[in-house]
Length: 495
Image (cartoon, rainbow, N blue to C red; front, top):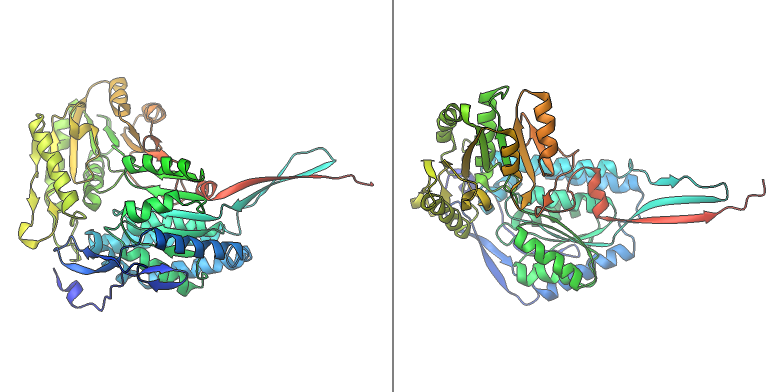
């Protein structure tokens, strides 16, 4: 590992945050937090279970019922949220290095993307607090009908390990802005920044009990949260397999609202009339290898029109060396470590599957930096992929690109839609009619045209089909964390 950690004053605290205090698990259990950068144990983390979830939910309920947060004037809640965002930026270097050591992404992107995006998300929803109005319905003169939004109550949040800060912010920011109490369970593979966010929320003035963080494993802490009878809403980002279980648990318990952002196998379609081939190549390669390919919206299925495929791949191959895995704590690293050995082995199995099923390996395909003790895989590209192949159908969650060619617009749209997922898609063409027509035909929550992943907090994020239920980001996220109430008042006016 570079001097980044050796020369820093970084401190690790793996205790949970319940009712405004750092606490060990009630039964004293803990687990090792292992860095994928070099395999070292960073710290021990509280291994929370049912009793800890119960305590966190009870703290959230007390905070909600006495209105210490929801009862504040919107302008005051906004100021606390703004201060929260400020503190995230003030601690940017610390948070970025924590994220890098915990889950392996390059520190330069942890700071410029993850920290910046989390702070912006918290600030944006804070700003929205006193700017979102309720409604008055059209009624006869004998009535006044108010349509108001009220906080749902206790929101359970379960987030994944690929973008720990951003995924937490996408959920806790609108939930807090709406006046709810939150119990957040980060992934056991990347718990450290979630715990620091809770510290910073308290420092910003958000009252104790409003944001609680319980750490631990899914069956021991996540399931009790999803099944809890006093949790009013559960918001989950992760795999489709676990997301389905979340919906079942929500129904089995108190029919809590369940919102899920799940897997993806996003198609990226490059037509021969692409307005800028170099930009298309850079975006396609950069987006699949960004964050080591550990992105639910990664454009992992690349469809290139046959007449330009060879030229596209030639340009793509020139870019691959700049994504060679390296120590993510170094400031110039583009691609870091996969989150752990389990994920690394999974990615390597998919690469072997691609080889055995007949795809042509044109780049990468091997474990890298074996001597480091970390979890690194070379940026990998397969050509000649058939839609029936495993690497074209299943979410790999690693730096593996499956390239296919096409000649017919209708056929490529059909292939792009032939997936259980529908999270994102890309279209590259200078033909306006083609761009609109294909975008309309693609069954995806977001369609990028002549760029990939340049959207921001102002637009919703979520998917069709088995990519989940509900939307993160934008004002639409408030729908998940509020109840809609109608108040119909009779008016017998004397005048």
